[in-house]
Length: 170
Image (cartoon, rainbow, N blue to C red):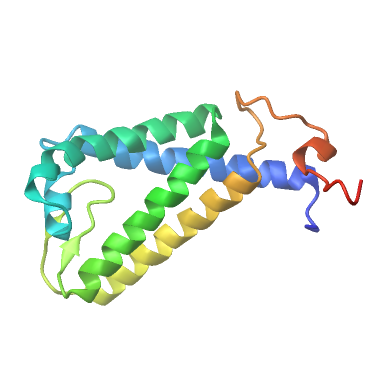
């Protein structure tokens, strides 16, 4: 059992929910208003077939904005957190993949994207992977403890409902 009280977990979850909402809303919003969406960034990863690029260039930012909106209002928080963790994990895999294959790209995480010069590649990829790992951790926390303040989700406040007790113990 965690040494943090239910109230502390609730506030930590609230902060994580709002931080992730801001990240998704900013990242997706910037890309939605770019000509071609995230198209150039997706091409630079050299992972998906060319026939998928146009669809993914608009779908990915739309998904990011959708997750951001759900997290901002606190609706379907656990589902949005799980989807966030999966998407951040996919980003970690994608960034690792281009680094391993020797490409030098701008990840396109917050707009832009595409091939760039080699300078600072190691630090850039390391910082992007650490950032996405941090966001993945926040999303996993939120999936585990989705009860937050100022949310539309209707999760009971009482500690016994927030932490189920196995039948053998009860």
